[in-house]
Length: 304
Image 1: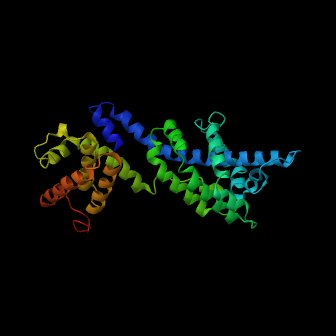
Image 2 (image 1 turned 45 degrees about the vertical axis):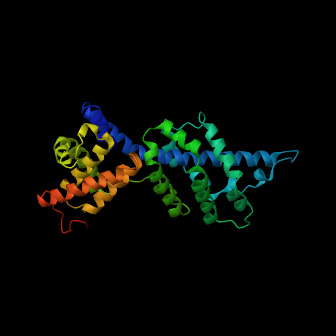
Image 3 (image 1 turned 135 degrees about the vertical axis):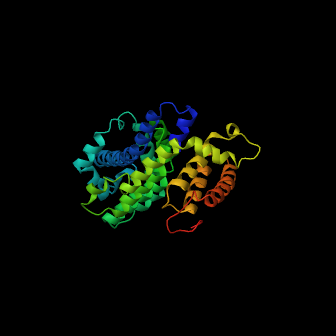
């Protein structure tokens, strides 16, 4: 959608550059994943330093929050920190420099140790890899993900990342859920596409939506009563256009799936009324395309 929108507002100049940006944005998902993991490592390092300072303190005048060694001995975080291949992967990314952005490490760390999550964790006398993983899951879900300052930091780092944020958070929670002792390394590498057909779909949708933009507009225009296409919000036009491209060209995708996906996209990126408007226009377009045999789905009914 962003690729087609960028192409449309630039009057379809530099489409190769826009496609490069599309590819870059997809591959940056793994970078955001690594940024979040590197933040956890820095928080763990800070917890270790704080514990060492409190342990070596002569006066003993140290808050109970820092006296517990549990955080500094968290088995999951410690294992990540001691896995050289993971550290090498993170250090290969030039955009990760917590020496410059250390205020976010301090912010998140302070929020963690002031939380009930931390209090419950250090007061639990039991020790296990599972308990340590649960603690990391809890502070990631309740503190890191929800921190607005950290979200702003992510957005400043990369304009694509806030769109990818929910997906990356899901991938990290999946990593935590599947983590066992000594199996971490392989979990840090994942495919951006589930299979070759997913990659092919991405490329074809991008290329066909661009190629058929004008032809799709002719179809759309028939159902916008008393409106010129120029008066239609550009983002709405792009969303409808993508939906039409998918409806006509991807026979394996059920009509209902296409409609639901693009209506959901409109809720995130357009106005409140757009979802109803787009739903109404697409419903009419679907009926027209079916009557003209322009939509033929493989072994599925119209609304399956």
